[in-house]
Length: 416
Image (cartoon, rainbow, N blue to C red; front, side):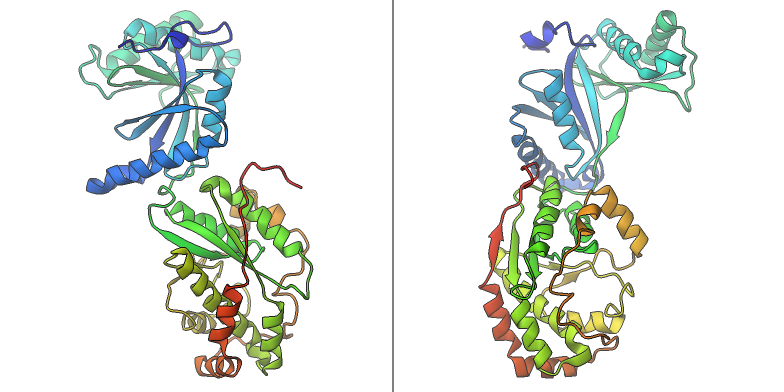
């Protein structure tokens, strides 16, 4: 069977390199998974296909040693570029390279390398270059060092560029594989982590603020598929917080796809807590009720944990004693990936994730109405349990869990 298909053997006049464009995906900690590695790689391949599905581009996936090769059926540069951009958001990938697949032949490799150097921006100012060759197939007649010498001499002969092996302006990478050679220059960092879904499922309590979207991202990056639960202040507030939660989940959906947002009208429950005499314990009491509701929802969805954006000491209610009181409310584990981060670190990551601007939009959620001026910083579990006994908090949580509204925000859908 020929190495290149007919379309690739006759590249269009717009193709700047002699070869077939493709995407090389470099894997990170997946390669350390030993006997379970196949399970992680299959999950990642499924996630890649799901991520590309929204682009309407048909692809083929080949698994190599620590590398995944993605080819498009069209072979068009625009399709390959679109796939490469989309891959930067897929968890489990550490580097995304826009590469060229050429015949397993030194002459074909030389032609591709010369083409790539010829179109590199650093060529205009005679930038320094280096060749980085790697032979995954040791049967190839030339060693990595011999390839470096051959390609380096040809680049110098054609472009008269100086060599710098430590800090080159142009680095040409050559990877000799089983049936072909991949040649590429620059790459884009990927999301890293583990493939989403490999670590199970959890439910994120999504407030609409800055912290919870970052917490959700961090748990997706560790392989969790997450659903989202938002507590709205309705009927005492407008729908603005729901719009924000929807927009946040839509942005985060690019990391996992198929995201679900569940909204609970929490205003009346919050009013009941206020009139129960909770006083300074009101904030902790209502958060315990949220967790109890979340536990029921998580069980119904097959979730094995709850996720919050708590950061130790960030606000007065997030003291160690209060966090301990919150853990007492439910049996499911509560994951707090931001627990040791400060606000500046969280905001920096939210900015990188494109969620910060959404979180900073004005709104009035359930945490900004019917709350006391001062919150208890050393809540006692027995006092909270007494409040919940008066309220029949278990029954309230059951009712709240049946009042859900489900939404399916999808990354890439048009905004209103």
